[in-house]
Image (tube, rainbow, N blue to C red):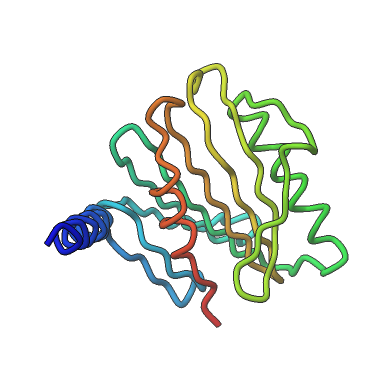
Amino acid sequence: MKNLVSALAVSGLMFSGAVAFAGETYESEEARIKITFPDEYEIEKEVDDETGTITFSLSCSYGDMLLIGNVFIYTEAVSEDDNLYEEGAEVLRICEAFGSKFSSKFISSWSVGEDSGLISSMKCSGDFKGYIGNYYVIIQDTFEWQFLVLGYKKTFDTGVEARFINSFEILE
């Protein structure tokens, strides 16, 4: 009986965790993305008249956490040889924008299917002082996908981050 109660309790916890992150899925063939946010999200689409770049900006607040996604569709493809350089430049740019120290020891590889990019841990300052998190970027041809997950150190939920990031799919 004790084992049955324990099994039911564990099942209930797993179910309640799944329900807590039922979320909202965004899918776009144009942006070649499918991702599930933990709660309602906002989306904006902009087209830069000068460059022709299309930008999809997605954002979601979940408790103390911020989950941000951007998709850039450029008019010219980034070559395979330049991918790593461009991804590194994006990591540097985002770290500077959020007042996070840039160091190669905070950067690692990140894979989605057969594609790979970079992930960088962040400890923010300035307007985002007290926030920690991770920044993810993948560049493929004319597409660039970026995700930023931030939260306060004491309340940062790695489970929410993992479910969010692991839900990301690049649509063909």
